[in-house]
Length: 437
Image 1 (cartoon, rainbow, N blue to C red):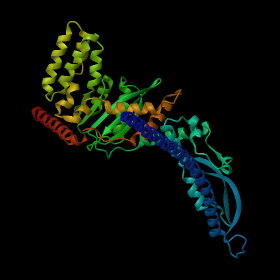
Image 2 (spheres, rainbow, N blue to C red):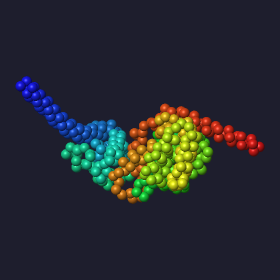
Image 3 (cartoon, rainbow, N blue to C red):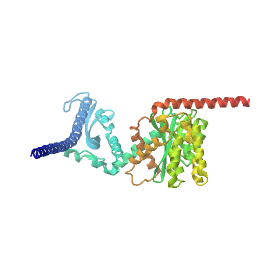
Image 4 (tube, helix red, strand yellow):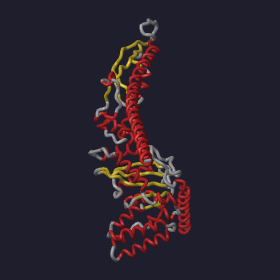
């Protein structure tokens, strides 16, 4: 009997608790709805108040130039000139206003400081870019705008799909031009990564620099392929012209593109140390093997790369290639090709998180992933110029979220190793000169 009473009491408590929880959820949903309406009402009110304030400011400017309205004033130098249609940006969209006019008796039309200020502020640029970055296509931009009061709806424009598209194209072109012409001479860049992203029929090469503190910098982009030496050299030559030092030792992290490596060596010589992406190399080798052998081979390669001794790692990888030679010569050849360059960071003595970061092209591939997400709403690529504009805008959006390179606290060790490499080359060159003399 007591057990049944306890069970009944427990059920009552559970029912009451569930009822209170449901009531709280309903209140929360109601509050969210109120907040949603308040936000829209507030944004509309701000737009309406902004127009009223602008009109008042323009009238104050006219009073300062022409004197009080309706009050005769001898010797005045300017007179009121009525109004003319104009527009300003408020609440994320361009709205028609009546610009008040002033005419100087000798010099003609005068500009009102308040309207000049208001017309130069352009939140629509920021709003358009943020909408595109959030995954909203330019065709849907009008649908995300806050509602305006009834009195302002007739005056709103510039949210049509064609208008937003034109503004986005103009903004991205400007970003692209500023990026491709800005100087990078002030950046200390011991590491540069290069990779390509495919957009329809175009390939855009992106260069990502990492400074001595582990900060990431987008250095430039160029249309073309990592398999095209001419395109690679064009990108690298542009970086040099904009200030990238060609006379310092630097680690270049790349995939397996032969033209990319050749272009780097031709432009930067022996001071360039190339780190081939180990993950690309591993996948290339496994493509030549049957599925039954892939796991064991992958494990052997990883064990070699995970060690701290680059010489021992090279011996292990050579032994693995020898074991594959008879039955799988393609896999053996793939492993041997560029094998030493998969050990460059290891040979510099880099360890820990920094080594795990720099032995692959993952940092720049993550950036390419951000570009892919940014451009996912583009249904048709008209030409390479359009692809370059969108990539430039995607990079502009992504750079605000850059984090320091994983393992950045160990960058001092990398810089010291690169400087030591440069000193050894210089000493070798001096010995060669003395020997030749």
